[in-house]
Image (cartoon, rainbow, N blue to C red; front, top):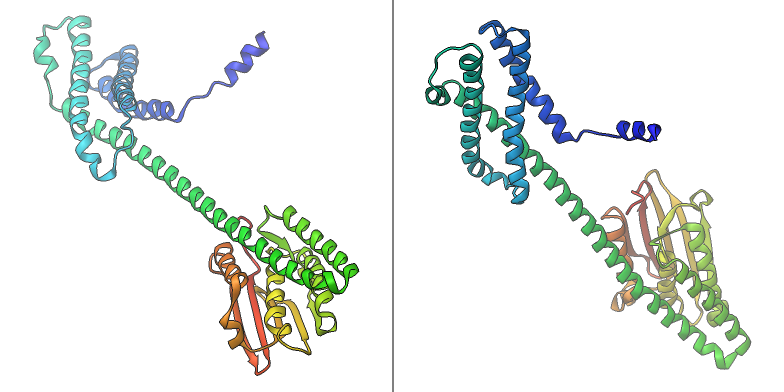
Length: 363
């Protein structure tokens, strides 16, 4: 039991408010204690007693004000209205400060020292007591309200930041929700043509699609995926597409293996390959080669997909996928990532994603 009591005592903490009250009024009252000790010859005991009373007066008045403000929910006042709101309170508190300080002074000289003094005259002795009260109460009230105003602004900023993050996440979730049906639709079209022509290959295609969808579901809460994981999905996707295009589709991959653990937007490479196959390989009877390159320079990861085709044909129907990708990059990397689609020569188109290497992990 004694150990528990000691532990409870050691856990007692003083709030910031009370620390400021005790330290602030304690320091201010030191000056008055010095005055009464040197000028008025109070003596050590009465000087200390006067010091305690002065500290108590300051804390008593300001704490009553704080209690009233908290009950009326007006601790946070708009900065522009602050002065107009607290001026009457400063004057009222200063008047009470004058009364209490004068009453303390009267009690010492009239009661303890036996001097004949008029109580009303002493209570309304205002210079310099009232002026001192106005100055002290002005400092205290301004400090109190400005502190709460500052804390309130921090809370508002944090709340707005959190709302911004939630809104951004909602946008990404919406884009991902659009992406999966788009991918599924194109994959089912690929399998559709195989069902009659080659049922065994169609079954393998369904297995591949099942794996792709399973991976997509498992990664649905992740906006970013490592390059290594993305390439694994890409290989399954290409195998699925090769069942339809056979030798017409060739994929060449060149990847800097040091980038395997770098995270990129989920299904971003797959989207570029899907676009390359749709607009570059499918329209050509002879098909063609799609080149995937992932390299880095000093500050960026550069993902390039090059395929046969003409940009003018692609522009006619860019599709949901590329628009989706551009929006995701803009949101995910806050404008630091880029996407471009360019005509390299008469028969070749290049799609390039550039991602910053040093990116905030909380994006």
